[in-house]
Image 1 (cartoon, one colour):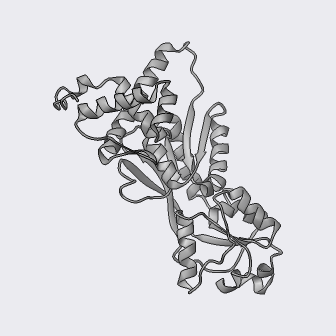
Image 2 (cartoon, helix red, strand yellow):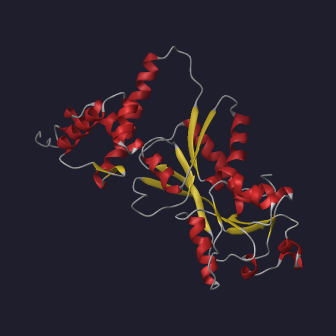
Image 3 (cartoon, rainbow, N blue to C red):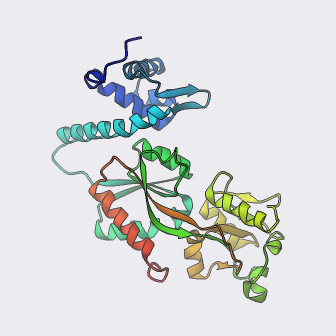
Length: 319
């Protein structure tokens, strides 16, 4: 193995192939998929990564049965490697271009509940101002989205704060805070009894639709029942799909426990109604997450400004 490069000569010894290989591994989180993406063999990718680690004198990637995971040093190096590779790719595209400007695209990550609530209004508003701008939207869990953001696959994420280790290199700007709501169809037996005033105990008599384990809404759902000395029953439907959850609630006696903005359109249209049941302690901030060291594109800046305006508007103004 080559000797670790001294700080002064390290920049001159690192090549673009080292950076592009490392970024591909970080984005794919798997050496085989990174190799396929780069049109290289897996041994070639492993060798290039080994060269980079030898130059740096530190391990950047942990290889295991679960795939490739960045070390703390790898996370730190990724912040800068993404910027370098993107800058060179943009410069190359400009040199190779035909002179005609391509339509700009903003790459956005969003939690499923946010994507169904705030994002449609924001995208419509953006297209009204910029008809030729493209939006590439990815939904997923908060952890998946933050990993993609760090790897440079997204311009920004509309999501939640995470553990300090996951927030390294990222900044968070609050948009709004929302609590859980228990929503049902207007003809639901609990909605028709005493103006929707009910108890959490009574909720257990009906099918429940809740978020999947490991998510913030699920954590708050579990805590809400535990606070009342109750446990979630067997046979619940666990899903992050807002479309599935809302249709279950509209077409059956299922009770959908969800962050309130995810159901806002159905509530506004009268297709669903909220049970008069307090959910204290379930409020959670939602905001814009960006790479601290990255400068957003002009389109990303404009889209984030649209999101800020809509987030701070009242529900009546955003219908």
